[in-house]
Length: 303
Ligand SMILES: CCCCC/C=C\C/C=C\CCC/C=C/C(=O)SCCNC(=O)CCNC(=O)[C@H](O)C(C)(C)COP(=O)(O)OP(=O)(O)OC[C@H]1O[C@@H](n2cnc3c(N)ncnc32)[C@H](O)[C@@H]1OP(=O)(O)O
Image 1: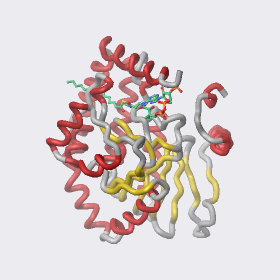
Image 2 (image 1 turned 30 degrees about the horizontal axis):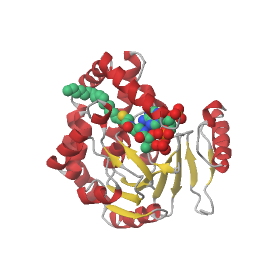
Image 3 (image 1 turned 90 degrees about the vertical axis):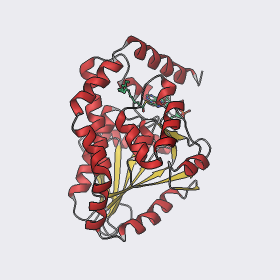
Image 4 (image 1 turned 45 degrees about the horizontal axis):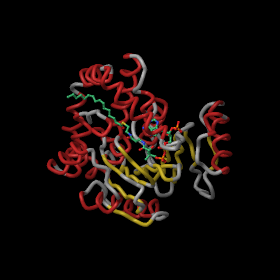
């Protein structure tokens, strides 16, 4: 109950949360997809709900990790499993990645996974993040981000790793790689993913200043491809998906691989070194202190 006490979610969501937690305790849950009639069933885990539509070959994947969809170790693991499952189902060609929490797409990496833990935990956490990025960035499926909330840092990385981004038009829905504001540094593969999306100069400025873009600026700089009124984001993502799925799979997939392989390979060839780098960076007293101060500021915001 204490965990739920701080959440700003409606009673309906709390009931749904209760049901999910119960079902998760029993193992992976399944329920019939509402009115689908095509035999497709929703599936998922505690923190990732997947609503597949076998008729269109598109699955909507919703993040649900209250209060802010921070990328905890559990969420990272569940995302990888859900992605792998969809990749292995031959009927699916596309994913809409979105959030099931009002106003938040993802708050990025879970700061509580990076503060006051031991080096083995940092290593495990970083490996899980690498795993998710490598899979999402290189998946043969079309992935469109329907960004229905704030999306800083790791949340922005998730969106940038998709093939196309639609952002809901609300000034609170900021997006960007703001690591420097926390006193930390975006790793090279975050930087590369952004360069591949908006170019070198715009990335250099965005990263050094830790810029968090509002929707109009995000569109202008190219961090997102489309801005639509709130409430239309999923519909717009589905419309965009039609265009992507009109292309023969083999041609689109080979092109995606041609565009992204070198970037992914750069991490693949130095995964272990990247983990060690992260662990030693995070283990510095000054970095731990900076993260603790930032986390404390977030916690006191409400007080
Ligand atoms: C040359 C050497 C190079 C070496 C490089 C090597 C390695 C690189 C090293 C490190 C790289 C790390 C990369 C990091 C990436 C990240 O993603 S870090 C996380 C960045 N995220 C943020 O800055 C977002 C912070 N959150 C917010 O701004 C807001 O929470 C919000 C998302 C805009 C939502 O605002 P609001 O709706 O008002 O909610 P609250 O702020 O009230 O938050 C509610 C509770 O959630 C907690 N929380 C928020 N964000 C996080 C988070 N990211 N992790 C964990 N917890 C979070 C917040 O504290 C509140 O908690 P309480 O309810 O008060 O307990």
